[in-house]
Length: 414
Image 1 (spheres, one colour):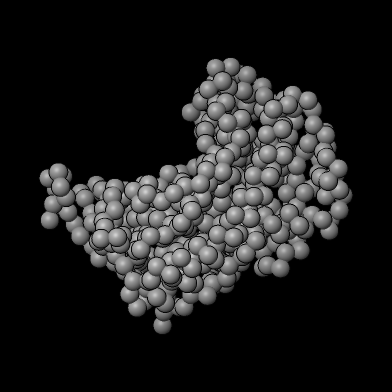
Image 2 (tube, one colour):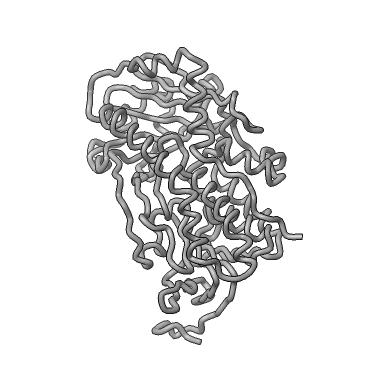
């Protein structure tokens, strides 16, 4: 069979479930479905997972899932750092804002780990299961329709075009999803006043241990401790990147040095603009996450702000909920539209609540800081949090667990 206009033979594959996107949501769902005995194929457009500048925070909710799956001990053998508190420096005032030590979980910390290590770990465990398949360098190009039902997807690979027909197609290919565009699903844009410049700077032995956010006159930077280097997120106003580039790299280095003085002796590590990546921030969600034969999860269903670093973990929660609700129907054939809609009904409320919190922080904190050149002082509420270990448990629970943490309920194949 030939794809129209391609001149190449099309390889055809049949699978019970096909997942487009080998990120946290796609791989976790693929692993859980295969664990239940559902034949599942994951398509990943890149050769491997070795890409920097992605969400690198593995929150207690995800670590709890790893415990439930019996994978936690091996997972924590991977190189990582453990953030048991989150702090911030506002002007000259240093505050502890979240303390994870009281969470009702096995791990009372955030694990800071390059996302490729997490993805490689899940993929390796999934590939031990006979029902799981992964094809890399397979980029989805178009949907296959059977009347009103989505019946599969076409992809391009180095070996030629590929056609996968399936009982369920899951779009987990992120906020720029080709699947959700072709499906014509309505996207509700919620807005974001900022973008992020993402970079790394070496970390010295006398640097502080704590993961910190720094806020000063018109500037915000978050620093994640990655052991021998800092992963830095420098927050800029939406659309302001070109202006920063026009001011020149020396001026940008000076901005960082004045905000975090102990980095002054290493900002020259930013040798050119190629070492600084622009991350365009978007906050949105689909009005409907499904069509007959199609389900969207993760960033494809709801793009999150980087506030709190919750995007990866929310995507994984989607995957767990989807597996809990769909594994048994998939074992019997194509899940009903109502079964797909049940995933959105389960996950939409915690998504909406988390986005409301993020938008509140964007509007009340980030927008005001970026628009002002006055040196900020902590508002009374943050000062109260900084002084009260009891209050610090609240943001820890919100960031660490979210509004509706999921637990593994999908069956395990015998």
